[in-house]
Amino acid sequence: MTNYKITNKKSKTTYFLNEEELTNFFKKNKVQNYDIINLTEQKRIKRNKILDTISIVSFFAATVLSTILIIENYY
Image (tube, rainbow, N blue to C red; front, top):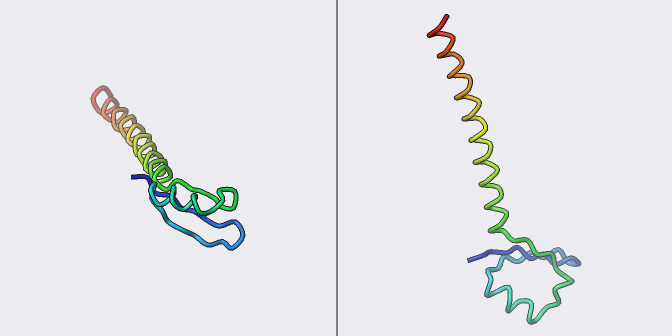
């Protein structure tokens, strides 16, 4: 289920809604008065950035360790 953060542009009131609540909310209110942020997508993007960082650090560490092993074995 997708979660959303809805902020009123005028009063700065914030609502946290799921998909069903979002459709019912905008039946009563106009969409142009609100900022809509997809929290589920933002959470996924944040998790992917963390995993990218971990993979880059792991690759760098593996490169350094393999270089050290090569130097110890052949020199």
